Picture 1 (cartoon, rainbow, N blue to C red):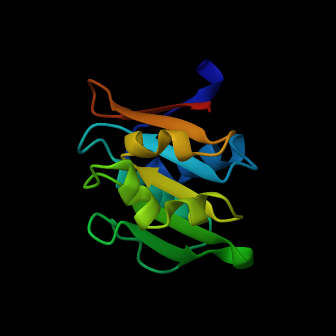
Picture 2: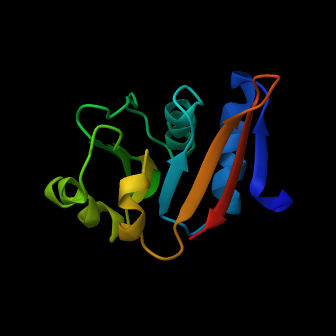
Length: 142
């Protein structure tokens, strides 16, 4: 899995790593991001959105559950945070499927509850905090 692993040594290089991550996952539209609280999921998603041309302020959708942004070339970017959801039925109620099965690019934080909903070919990415406080991003296709 060495090819599916990137390291963010500092915030100064996060956009470069985000660009490389998207390049290595070209054609993928759904990204499930795992990581402990404070590992940098939202920060990484902000960098991914910037690389995709989102000019609006990207904020955590902890309470709104899903935020939608416009990127370059008419790309629609959806950012969801499922941390507060407790039941699978809540995913249906918020309309998550509608975002997952179209041409939108979707980044999902705390996706555990939604794994069976994700389309084949989605990326499951994990952000880990290394001893030196760098972030290690590893991923696999579902």
